[in-house]
Length: 289
Image 1 (cartoon, rainbow, N blue to C red):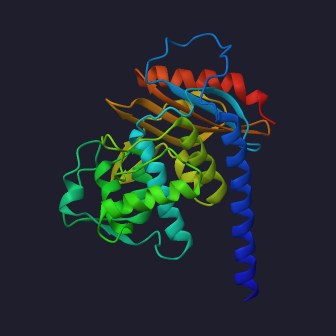
Image 2 (cartoon, rainbow, N blue to C red; image 1 turned 45 degrees about the vertical axis):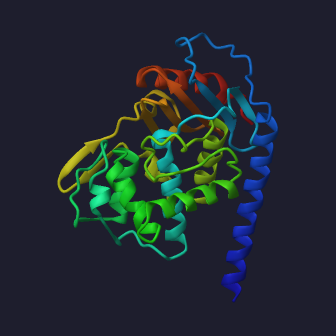
Image 3 (tube, rainbow, N blue to C red; image 1 turned 30 degrees about the vertical axis):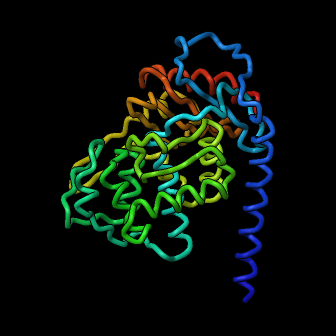
């Protein structure tokens, strides 16, 4: 009984912390406008461009551009897929060694993918690593079906419901991968909220997001989050791209006692996206508390 009470109190403290952070971020970003960018330009911004840098300790927005304008998340979607996986693991519904079956529907997802065949399976631990490093759409769909009782559509409803509890008011999910769907939308502000929530709620799983490679069936797959190597103190999160979204990136940085999260969306190339994030972090990390 004492353990149950302690666990409940811990969850309450986490919830209250998230409420405070979300309230501050919401207050700072409510206008949806921009803060004057005093940095030297990396490249001209696109019509799809949106970006935000948030002090993860206080929730204060340090930089913002089009922060509440609707954008396509692309594979940043997989951060919410993993959020629900981590939640299931914490609740004892899933273990790292459980096997996730690959359905015909999952196997048919377009790249990026692991090229698993229908009837095969993948351990939960490997699936998590593959989603972070390879961003495999076949594995994301399989995870969605696994956690959604056999239905990715049901899982997408679970994702959207969780988004609302995290204060992600302008985000709607229709699939677990981020593959194109005109109704699957988000904002830079909402992706920053999700990034902070992952760090705060699951510190015991967060190291997954810092991995740069994964080995599957003897094959080592390298990741493509080059910003991790460009930014001092970067410790993870996720890249994303579709033609409709442009190049997206969520990045977490801890440096010199500072803790910030940044989101860049809608860039024309991975190189520009990475350089933009590097410039944002070099400019605004020092302004965090």
